[in-house]
Image (cartoon, rainbow, N blue to C red; front, top):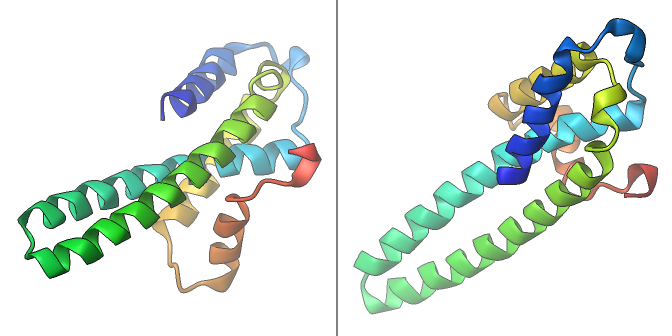
Length: 140
């Protein structure tokens, strides 16, 4: 979570960079920035689910508690996968971000936020979001 804030902070820091020093981001860079935001949102959601499941397990009957503990374990494994994907994208983007057009990157972030808040029944949105969980483009 902290790493996402660092990446976004770096983006904000460089929004004032002169346009002459900025270059248009490649498709891979735009996709990476989109995915950084998508993964940050998914990680936050995952954290909330883990907390809720743990709290429920603490108050549940023994039989239900075992199921909730199992669910919590699965959620923790997924969280680790999401955090790994986010870390890989941050390592890819951090050295590039200063040279990129911040407005284009901000557009990618807005698109990610819109998709994250959008309809999960839309197959195209779901496919874009899920693709972020395994970033394989540009050698990631």
